[in-house]
Image (cartoon, rainbow, N blue to C red):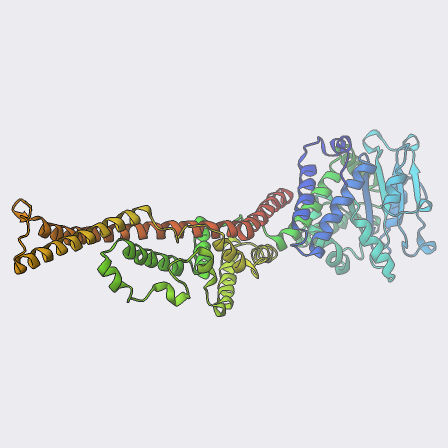
Length: 549
């Protein structure tokens, strides 16, 4: 619920006033912390936001002043003196104030406001300003005066009623008497815990007429000393006598000044906001957002890539690529001998026509548990680093979203790896060209050897072979043999160098594409949820900091 802009403007001096902005910020901080910070921590702040909004909606023109005190302090007599009416029963007819009594100044009264506070109509009275005998500086139009139940009553319901209504008061007037002004009960239970509200607190030493005139200043100074020890050093203390009227006009002027300034409601609400925001901040914290650094992100990707066996896959692909290329580009004789060497993929149960799907499925099923455990550790590490310095509710929330998919993160990564088409079984075009050239060399050697054999047979059998052509003095058959062998060896050496470069390049490409696939899974299932939670925390931090003032 929000207050109307016009009402907020009247009470706080503008739509964008500090107090209304802080109240809105507190409400947003509560919503951001919901589901993260304990509800019993958030509930008072939420109740404050609702109560303030309802108060502004009902009335922004009234100042609620509550008279609180112990039995016998003369609180009800003071209430009557301030109203100039005999409204509150005193003496033997009313030994304790068992219910709250309210008097509202002004022609329109404050019935809706009082009913909202839970004060029944029979305990309300409207004080018309035209009947007010006070001087101009004591006009109390807009005042809602409450006579609260006695704080030292033996009835539990009286304590509860007082504690409830104190929360609604814009200005608290603690009424003390000369015999009990140092009573620890009121100081320990109420005044000392309300030290943060000193700006909206008045202390009245009633029945001052019972103190000899020469000792009154000393008594007032002693009250101020005790208040200062309770943390309320700046509180105004006024000596009055409800029966003789001494000091009552001074108290009225003090109340009238605060009503005209319309500062009490604002100051009380500001103090309430600070107290509520401090309670929330103690649980939720206000530290800066650490976030996920590039180094942390890289470490997470590396850890999950290792969980998925990417380094092993890449090494196997590089080794297999070199083997397959050598079988297609090497000298045929050397290739036949190379078949005797062990295939690096055989350990994975695969052959040279391996696909990425087959390769990813070749992992040992028994390692799945280890992979999951390693993945969970990596997720916890990045969550802990992303939440360094944050209070436990936010650390738990960040860890929760980071591990929400930990059960299937390994499966998701494996699926992503399987779906990545890296063309690892596709031979390079130049392999086939070199293979053709190698066979051309073999044919040249075979042709040359056959030619030389034919020449030898002809010479032995004296068959008269025709003359053999030569090139730079080297017979053509011999040149074919030498050229075929030398060409094949040179081509094999050159191909081996190119194969190593190609295998390394293919391994890097595979590694890059697999890591990109893993990175996409990590971004969607881990990083994005963490960053979203950190954004919520950042908004909470900004709002709670503003609410603290």
